[in-house]
Image (cartoon, rainbow, N blue to C red):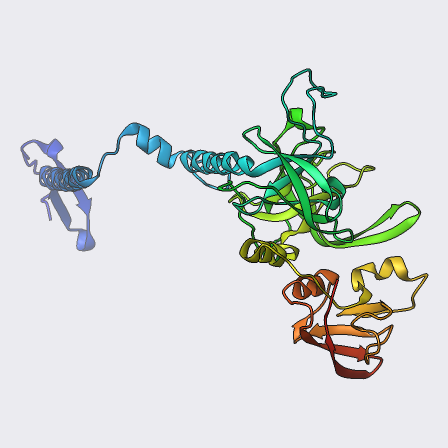
Length: 409
């Protein structure tokens, strides 16, 4: 306790703080000491922060030293993103150039086809070139076999004139044709020709990019290239000509622009492989054209290429697949999911006098499943006359196998 009435002389009284504590004791704390401790903590804290910043800066420096600095032009080409699915600009340009190179090379195999030989007076031009292409075809072998439409070249043994990419014109002879398919093969006497690679039309998918090449409106617009997609597959269309009706089945539908003169030209993938043969377009609508799947004619081309001949076997029936059913409901009362429907048996043909009957459903031939008429045609084209085949047939609730010997068409 401080004695009352006595004055104590505290030096620098302002530097002390008096605080009341228990039992009336006063604790005197030296404020200078607290300030010193506080200042020391600040120095330590600041030093720690500086040390951490120095270590972080050193780490960044080391990391930067190990980064490979690329040339600016290379970096831009590799890293700049395009809007095409994340591909780089360089990659898109490279792919585009590659496709253009392939198409440029492919067009060398496109030919112009005319039923009349030009004398230098074209309705489109005053040139005196001895060339005229009113239809299109393409070389399928190096020794002059050309694929086109029958309505372009004419039927078997017809004559036509073929104009190649180099301007040379040849006499052509149709060595094979099929009016139901609207496909023909024409032969010219030439060798070492640039021909197109035939692809696989059985694996096509809706939405894939395709290109159509042809000679629309004649020779002056020769080798025109248009692009589009596969819009649909396995299409069936009804053709009415000369008061007669026929059906084209298993067609490829595309929105690639097809004009008069494109008939007989190829539909190709970006890699240059042919997957179809242009045949018809819907004149009442835009962007609806059709092509015949290339697989149907590959066995025939192989035969001509390897042997110079093709003997077409014949089963001797008229049949329809299920895609034609909507057109036939007024004529036939039928419904089936698989196979092909036998509508008629040719008199004295290979199927005549066998167990096969009208209204049978043929589901297989030699254990190969049949769902379209082109499935049957493609298999028969691999066989020869007098070959024996086995047909798996459904007749109501009955199923049976029928053997028959193929004839010659």
